[in-house]
Image (cartoon, rainbow over all chains, first blue to last red; front, top):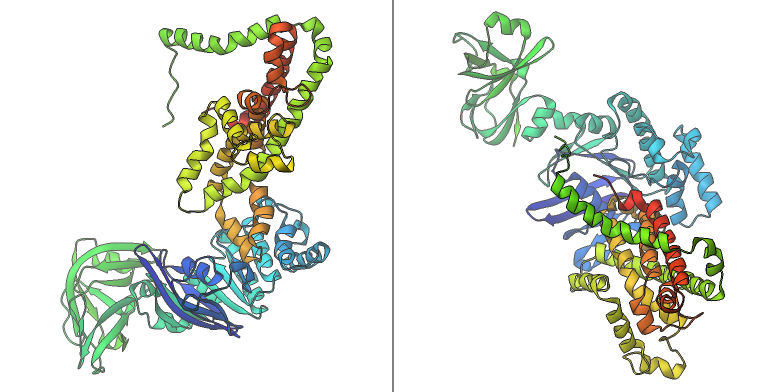
Length: 351
Length: 262
């Protein structure tokens, strides 16, 4: 039992082209910046946007295949969606929102309400059954939306930024709640989010989407350990370089050169360097460190006792030092500094 | 910045007062000539009661037909795209600007005994001109566009994502329309229906042309007012007061929706 999809959707200048396979019982997170096509992908899987090309099968049954002229309408797919901003029906009580899908699936009114009540109680909302969505808090609305989606017993559960509309205080608790309910749901779970915390906390596997294409996929740990795009590197908080290795030297795409500890396989490589592994000096160092560059400080970003300093070297780097060190070295934007990186601190992997 | 309101310049005030007087004076005149002491007596005469009954039946029926036919029409115009959509929208708007008497003549040319469709309906004994059903049709022709136009605007701005949510939960199009779309537009639907009903109630030209002026069958209040004006002006004024009262009532109920003070 699984979801297998190749989704190709064109919109003016934007093209979404994604291939993915998710097993039942697995939670996959589509993680990407705004405008990467996450929501479009989710709507395409739900059948709300037609595929231009591709194929989508769920448990071996074809949901959509434009080449064969197959397109199961949204309402007939065993798919439920928890939408961004919940999209609860404002004219119905919480109970009727949850019962709506059951009624559409042919359950008699009394039975639908009984099951819906059970779902609300399971979400700890038994006392809010009669409330209209407008009277619910963000967290309560989110739980009603989850109950509404799970109540129809879908084979594929799609969640679009499920926690985005919830205030920060309630988010941690809600994330635990969501995680528990996702764990007890046996179908395919696909989550869409721009928040890495949400993706890493809820998903077994992360699929990074940028500009309509998958750039990286793997467990949260694997993705952050070996970023394959600037955006992921920023999430992981590391410097990312891309270049061509030759012996112990990597010619970087943006100019400059990186000297690495041992000869890497020749070819395209990624290199990451943690900002803490980058030292800033006032004078040119003597001795061992082999990557030594000079450049002006572009920006200093202080967060508590830590300062992140962007230096306009070739290539540009971000270094992390203590605020005490900033004062001791008299660091300020515009000032020229020497940057050194120990070769042993560089993580190299094929590009 | 919120623009502050200006003080009224004298010249503009004078001209504006003339304009306002144009609306207010006739109303005052109507109230002044009204046979207040005799009002009950005049209004409970059989002719007046009959006209009021015909008016009520026809205008309510015309509103019902407008909702049943107009809502899908508005939905299609607001939601779908097809060749000739803008032409259809323009034609829907036409009865609003068309002189009603022309509408009446046009209806005759379709449903008259030798009309476009009338010639086929006549052998089956179906005759619309000069019947109550004909009066309903004439009022619908004139009033329905008001309903369609107001619903088209609302349906166009409705949050479609709620309908998507309903579909994802297994609702087919009809269920979505019935349980999501219509309940969400219900307040506007009521306002549009009220506007439509008010227009149907006041209909004169198309009705008298297409349905004639038969007391008890097609003589609505406006027709009765026109007829009585010659012989019994006090009855005409009394019936006019009824229409004025109804209009004012609708206006008061709907003011929040129609008259939004900027």
